[in-house]
Amino acid sequence: MLRRRTFCASSLAVAVAGCSKTRVEGMVLNRGNSGEPSSLDPHHIQGTWESSIVGDMLVGLTTDDAAARPIPGAATHWEVSPDGKTWTFHMRKHVWSDGMPVTAHDFVFAWRRLMDPKNAALYAYNLWVVKNAEAISGGRLPPSALGIAAPDPATLVVTLEHPAPYLLELLTHETAYPVPRHVVEKAGDQWTRPEHIVSNGPYVLREWVPNDHIALVKNPRFYDAHRVRIDTVYFYPTMDSEAALKRFRAGQLDTQNPLPATEIDWIRANMPKALDLHPYLGVAYVMANYRRAPFADARVRRAINLAYGRELITDRILRLGERPAYGIVPPGTANYPGGAALPFRSMPPGARLAKARALMSQAGYGPARRLKTTYSTDTSPDSRRIATATQAMMRDIHIDLEIVQSELQILFARLRAHDFDLAGASWIADFDDASNFLDLLRSGSGNNYGGYANPAYDALLDKAQNLTDLAARGQLLVQAEQMALNDDAWIPMRFMVTRNLVEPYVKGWTPNAQNRNRTRWLRIEGRPRR
Image 1: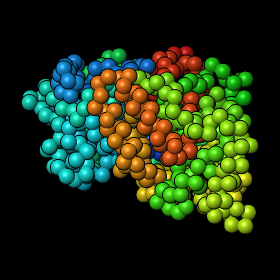
Image 2: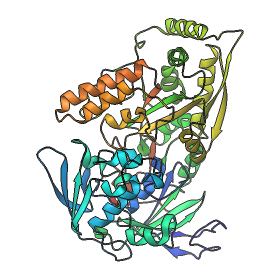
Image 3: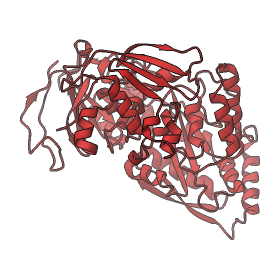
């Protein structure tokens, strides 16, 4: 189906000047995508709203199928050594969008760049499974010591620190993507600007108008281009989900994430065929900053955990069918038996509140000396409602919260800098394994915003990593989760569901626990004229 689009680019736009002429863009998909990207460099993105875009442009050794399962990508096949530590990948013969060959050397260059501490990549720890990666990130070894080698342009050998049964799925994550050495060495950190960027995936960047849209166009040199149906895809930053719903109803958006929980009853009654609510490998939680008093005090953290009304959030405020979270790892995570829980889970609400007040009293707080602190969150309408409810809950245990809302980019910068008291956050699995959640609480992890540090916890994770017996490994991870819960390392809130609106004429959309629906697999059939 053909659609025409006219827009006027802002003065901040790159690769577009003034008002563009009307253009025929082929089959177009308009995606509401929650937030404004901070980067399109796979080594510097930090959220799902960015990985949705970059995942349309770059393909790792493996990539996502329509249901977000790993399939061959830049590699066509591979072999694994008997001990599970050496993987040999055979490269697909394909090219970057400028015609230069994609080789194993691009992966060597990319992964060394990721680990180089000078690059300050937030998610470098995601590939610490590779030999010497953690030592390189810590500045103890040079990037050349990384366990990755290209004996020839068509062969890539990866050596791991320990067996990783989840490796093929991990390789679909943006940290494992290649970057074009020939472009990065020339343009440096500016390589992702439209005038420089090249990609090896289904789409290439055409333009980026900050705070308005990002436009990708089909890459004719993509190895599977003949199967790609969408010619142009627009990603719009739609953090205001209530405004986005109006745009969706007006036909300006074909898909939208997230949807506003405030309108869930209306959506269920009036747009049931557009609603995509499915179990998600995601958890929402509240963090306490260990580096600031009084949150290093375990009594204060336990009091907050006791007083937090998870069921109020899931059943009365959001009403999306999410489950209250008394743990860290979502139900249904692969090779994980579960069973860890906050020790007060079976305690009645009244007893929890009494215990919380007693702990606050022991810590020196009460009606005459209230704890005044802040709660940081993003600017979405639902986050504001959750923050207001949290404020009321904490008031019952002599804590006065000042709510501090920030745009996503600013919020994440503050979290990384440990510049907060209490903060709301969420984590969506990069790959289907409990370690991806539990590693968030490792000492020194790039996403351990609260600064939790427990050597015994780290040791359990290390021991689990070196096991090839999946059942035994799972039991060790359960022990680690229970240890973190006993320490009140987090205040778990809820296990999430996907929150998509998808027009019925968008075909190929496959609900999945990763909530990844790459544009490569989508098409438009029967879009009504408006």
